[in-house]
Image (cartoon, rainbow, N blue to C red; front, top):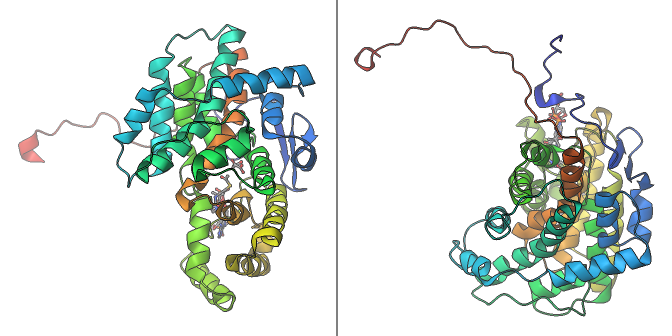
Length: 378
Ligand SMILES: CC(=O)SCCNC(=O)CCNC(=O)[C@H](O)C(C)(C)COP(=O)(O)OP(=O)(O)OC[C@H]1O[C@@H](n2cnc3c(N)ncnc32)[C@H](O)[C@@H]1OP(=O)(O)O
Ligand SMILES: O=C([O-])CC(=O)C(=O)O
């Protein structure tokens, strides 16, 4: 077999075949199972979209009702998981808390039966159901409160906001949050999904698969960028300071958070939708001063870097939406994870259906036949 050219970051190297989602980065198109993201954002719900991603087809009403009921049944987490979270340092990052809690689920559901569709479904349901509960629980625990139990009369998105803010959300806020979850659910073979697939390919348990993906999503070049965007907008402080601040970043050759993408060379279609969701929230609950800074920054970056294909990605406007929903800044990436778990699970299932362990090669750049130097002579 011939050795291919080495491409840092595996740029443009196909690492799998998949029918889950599709991105055309030149035209700004994203489809889940062939359906455009704009259409899903308008007409679907997160749980219906998760079902579509994992099982490949839109559910019938009966299938969706059964799925929702299963999710609702599994939302609670065991008291030992909550007690474990109480031992985490309050100052720890919620993504670390989520990674540890997701991995801990493997201690309780350790039976592994990867060829059994019922096992796959049960694990997928458990993860989709429990991850929001664990994210909200850590938030309340670190504030010194007891976690709030899920409410059966609230749907997935509304229930999360309720568990987080300890009050029932406004219906517009709940719908906007549900759309955010749909938008973030899947994005082909990005870094965290690749991480999930590599982990899955060893035939380990699904909790390890998801914990590994959570750890990968946390980094500032990936899902962690949404948190960094808000710090950047706060650091800019005013519309007048946008251009001097940007010039400073470019001089230092620093990355502008929330901009650029390996695949998109135009504005990310999800950023466009998130921007319109932010506007809907501002109309009802008041405008955020950071929105004006964000718009000016988008304009300035386009002028300076548009020719290089650097435009807002999904992480640019999401923080403005989340802040308006009462979500603390360091929960932005865990909230991304609540959603992306759907895509990770879809890829886990697809990987298992035709598994071969990931084991690429390398180009060795070290020496050979090196002498062992005794410690006293080094
Ligand atoms: C959910 C998500 O993961 S979406 C992405 C979230 N991440 C961010 O927003 C962090 C900021 N963005 C970035 O770091 C990058 O654009 C990434 C990591 C998303 C993609 O990285 P890559 O495809 O490897 O692009 P790479 O970093 O090689 O950049 C290519 C060129 O564009 C420039 N560039 C890319 N993104 C940016 C940016 N945000 N700000 C300034 N310049 C940028 C690079 O400096 C480089 O320029 P050069 O060719 O003159 O050296
Ligand atoms: O696709 C990528 O490289 C990053 C990602 O997860 C996304 O944009 O949602």
